[in-house]
Amino acid sequence: MRGHDGEIRKVRKVKRMEHKTVVKNGIGFGSVLAITISWSIHHSVIWAIIHGCFSWLYVLYYVFTR
Image 1: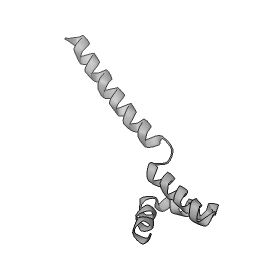
Image 2 (image 1 turned 120 degrees about the vertical axis):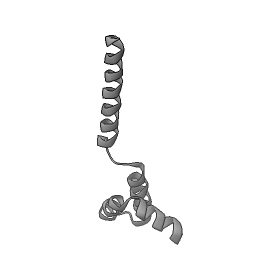
Image 3 (image 1 turned 90 degrees about the vertical axis):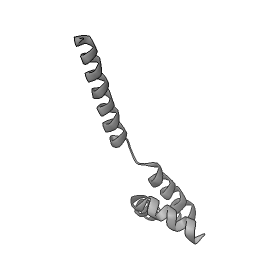
Image 4 (image 1 turned 60 degrees about the vertical axis):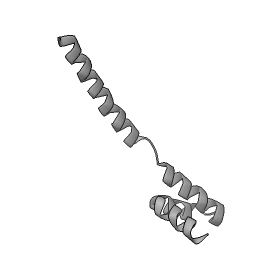
């Protein structure tokens, strides 16, 4: 029975680590999409950074105004 409990604890620990890893990895898809759209329109690094910070808000704005 102890081995089984240890396996459950390992699984829970791995799940927690996976969640933390996903949160820590880079920027999200929305930010990349916003930066790409911004760069294709403005060709400006500053605007790309600003739009990347707003991510999905800028993507939705772009979709509804085009």
